Image (cartoon, rainbow, N blue to C red; front, side, top):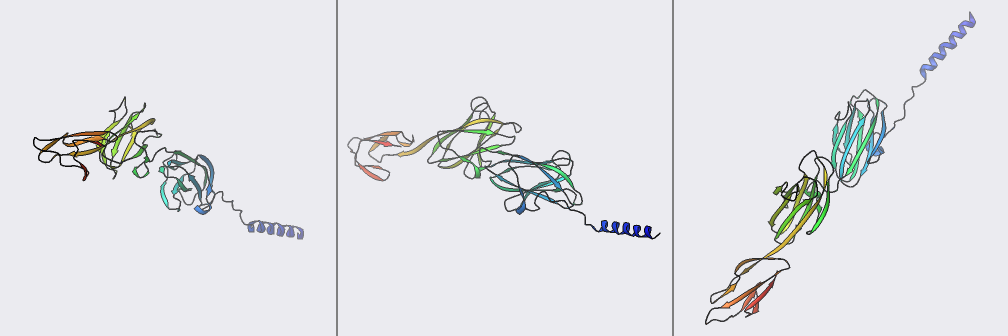
Length: 307
């Protein structure tokens, strides 16, 4: 009886000891804030695990240049994703736009640092997941502020790399100009000409060769923008953007009483060209003086004005 009593006491103490051992806690696989975020590539897949209720996993992305970012989770866990900027301020979030109950975020982003937070949709649940990052660089800006500057007489390659992509170009005209902008290639393009305030001046679908847009306008000096997209919102394709500028100058010619000048009035002269004027005095009169741009050049009977 005594031996059994001692054995029972030992067994009881052992059970008590086992109950006093603290439950082990799994190590966290990813940081819980932007400062401790796990760095991942711009095209990558990373494993994650919401180990404990309320856990949130943070990831860091360094992206360049501007482009289109797609973030999504896969797996059976009901995830919730949040995208933050470089200051860890929330930009956008999603619950289940992905497959099943997975989040998916799609966004045009500028080059820079971003953070992604992943948690369980329910604060009291856990589960594993995969984080997929897909980033596609954009060849040209998506608005007037990020437009690609192009020169007159240039041809620039463009790519509508995803449905809904719009490429913006900026053209600076030094003088009054006849501006011709159009696309070349096999893509069905749609072009829009905008002024310096990014307001629409004109647009076109297929006035150019085949299904290419073409816009031609007489414009005053200043900054202008051209937006190029696919005519079909769900389609993509490559093209060449062509810019042709004919800068011209207005010359006003007139004669006072006693003679004539030919041609007279406002004459449009292309930059680089020249214009001749013949000055003829009436009978009994002579040429007293010729004034060009407010400066006397003498009593010439003919003048030659470069544009």
